[in-house]
Length: 168
Length: 104
Image 1 (cartoon, each protein chain N blue to C red):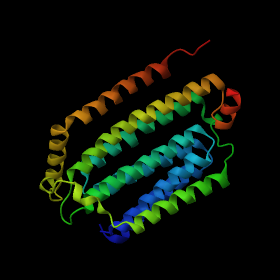
Image 2: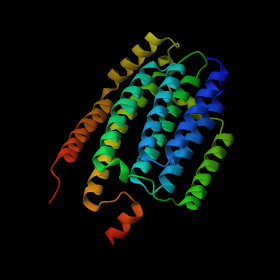
Image 3: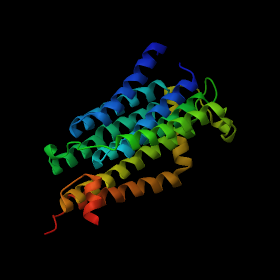
Image 4: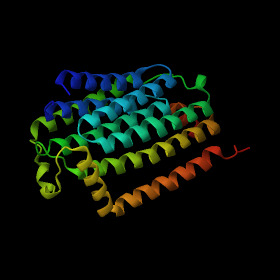
């Protein structure tokens, strides 16, 4: 991908994120956040991460978009307008976080690269990457299984909770 | 491909937008959208580091962690949205200041 297309993709993601936060109607915000996640999936693909791109599109653009829309329709779309904001406090806190992170990035030359085993690196080939990620997930499956079990239990509990009868 | 520093700046900007949404908005759904943006920035950071670690090679560990994180994020958002539905049914509002007043 050419650098201009890459910059355009990054700028579109930032624009969609900002619009999703600032647009007045929450329904438009949900649509914009889905668009942002779809573009992030494209970025993952161009960063040689096809497996992650697939998961991102399936979960963020598919499942989470459906959850957001169902929630908005259960609540009533007309009632979820943005009412007000604490702009000054939010801007101050955000600026402090942003300046701290930028300072850390500029000050530190990323010394974390020594921590990873070099023998597990693979060339940027789609089939080799998918094979290596699958092997890693299988050989280190304990945290993955725990995470998936938590997700299953939580999703079931939430479905029961949302679809359950309203209290009198 | 753009250099690592450009992607780092991009991730910081995305993270800052998420923090801004979480801190300055009063609508609960908007705050959940901010959490979504925050986690997207963190996931992208993992992928960027895994891609730029060694030129011409990819680290599969970062990809695996991101896959786990995406699945966990689905569960987190499901919990948060069910809380939103519960709070709206119970109190009739999604404004966090109104909810704090009602609690008092």
